[in-house]
Image 1 (tube, rainbow over the protein chains, first blue to last red):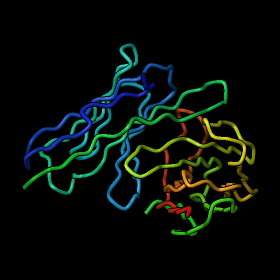
Image 2 (tube, chains in turn blue, cyan):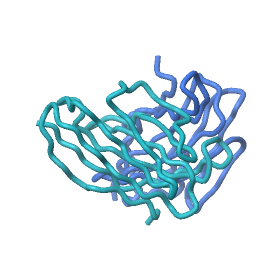
Image 3 (tube, chains in turn purple, blue):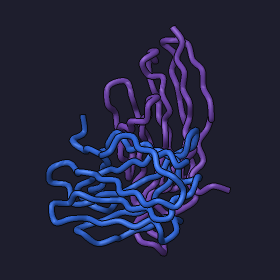
Image 4 (cartoon, one colour):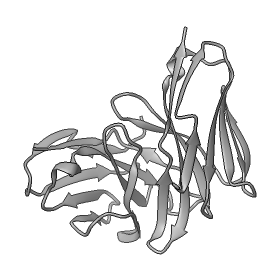
Length: 111
Length: 115
């Protein structure tokens, strides 16, 4: 079992729909990152969370530390939101600080 | 634009060769981390440097090594290249190494092909 699990792996939505991407992790963490990656490779950091909830435009990220779970929500989705969304957790292990990534969720928003 | 620049953007090497990839961090950021992303997969953490010292490492062999310079720019060196080293190599800078200060700013990556 991976330390960070994302669901769903693939998601197709109609423009305007409300979208939720989930992330569960099994290790103790100091922070959780939500990242967006467009074709071609560039990664953009959307949120860094250690508790509670953050909102930026149409994006909302929540984290429940006790349940080891985070969600990324997109309201009023748009085709330009089509990308891979990656959850990554920062933890401290034998090798020091490390970042563990989920496999990503491929989102396609159709117009 | 994040202010993190990587070079070269693309390169081709043959098995057994060595490669050096470079990353200039965002101004004021003292932490750089490196990631390997194979095609169709999520990034894998290679290592992290904080104030010129390695302070975290993933499951990569010793032929993956790095440096961080006093200006906080960084290099990733890979010796004895193997075909499986073909990947996109990403670096990210942050203000600090830990959870509360570690918002990440990524470069566009260096795409390495090993033939």
